[in-house]
Amino acid sequence: MAQWGVTIGIPDAPPVFQAAATEEQPTQKLSWKTDSPVWVEQWLLSKGKLKALQELVDEQLAKGRIVETTSPWNSPLFVIKKANKGKWWLLHDLCQINNVIEDMGSLQPGMPSPAMLPQNWNLAVIDIKDCFFQIPLHPDNAPCFTFLVRTLNREAPRKRYHWGREYACVSTPSGLKWVPAKWVKPFIP
Image 1 (tube, rainbow, N blue to C red):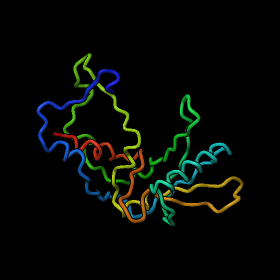
Image 2: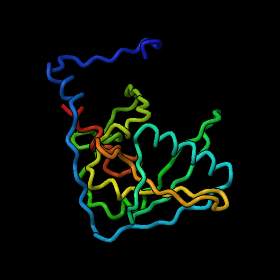
Image 3: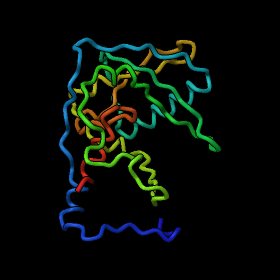
């Protein structure tokens, strides 16, 4: 942002701000409205989309963000081609999962509503890219975010994965309804 003459400064920031903003946050176990697993069948994808999906899943597997699983939960994945790029975007449809998670209160406690901002107020938009993969998710919740990857013409068995690492903190998939609160919380004064 410096290339545009923008600097980020926090006037009169308390000395503990950086420590509070960068300290590791404890994992928070989700509360569920049901004990029954949610299963939403994977949508059919074209050959090109299946290939892109497999490449993206292999990438996440290599980064340790997903592991193979036998969880009874499932929600569908799909891919969207990024505009003006040859890359694909992996999307995990968590609509049905979000419906069975107990609400955790306001998504951004203490933050003003955008409608309350004065007209012509200067705003900055920051692309936080892969931040969702840095948010810890309680290990007991990881199996609830399972998805399966089909193969073309059923040439191999379907593989099932869930987000997380076998022996470290679990990564949160984007689209989970409580993520904004978790991400904003460390930065609220």
